[in-house]
Length: 394
Figure 1 (tube, rainbow, N blue to C red):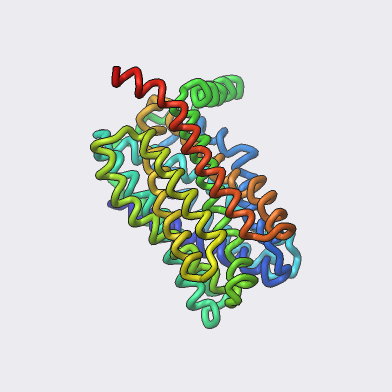
Figure 2: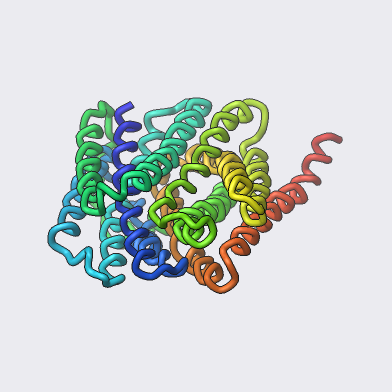
């Protein structure tokens, strides 16, 4: 319970920070492409060394890492607010601020997800725990973006950043209350050993088929949600004609759909294989994006986004469970750090390309293309599994 509550505070703080950066960027540029800048700042540190911190996390107490990272992020945001020229009109200041916070965040996610797998040992309970934590991940994003959209006029950017600082400190305090027997601390190793262990994690993730497919699926579905989050501010301004501050309502619609989807995932898991549930998720999410792209009215756009969120839940939760159950405990943090790197990579190059395409060809065509690709992934899965299903039936 303490780990879950700490996740609420930590995710809320990070989303508040991201909201402020995206809003600052769009107000200055009014471009879908430019809103990628804060996302790029969050993603680059993960690409550069996100997967490599897994070796460190595997060998150090997870609880201690979580506490230290939260405190350091709180102090860093205070420094950004009062020391660094955060609120200058320089986009480089926004980019640098995102990078600094992201560097610390790379240690947080693999520590948290590894700790979940340690505390919950039963496979059925692990799926439920992942459902709870992933639903919280998106629910917090929905609540924070919606609340920020509603209160932006009177709270202001400084108020949001101060609130983020408080939330990070509260998260550190709640983690300190966790009673859990930590694994042995293994600090003694040289760089050659570190590099060898890092390559072992990469090799395992690539050679284990289900792990490899789970990571690739995670990349695509997080790219979809990253696109909605980053380019949503342009959508509400240029398409719906709303104030840019209201872009959080798009996250709310997608998050509500995902919440409903997660309710169904636990029931489907009792009857179907995780890989099949993931394939259904791609089909449903793709159909939702097509509706979102070609809908003639606002209500149709929102229905499509709701449907897309519903299908995405069928992808996120099983993939997390596959990674935890298929990976040996000794290298779980390394594989989950690769997952974190992929999550952040979806905020960089794919969104950079999509933002440019949105400015050039229109945001609807970008989402239509993503929807069609998602449906093709489902078709490819069905074609690849038909021979095995026929053989099993025979």
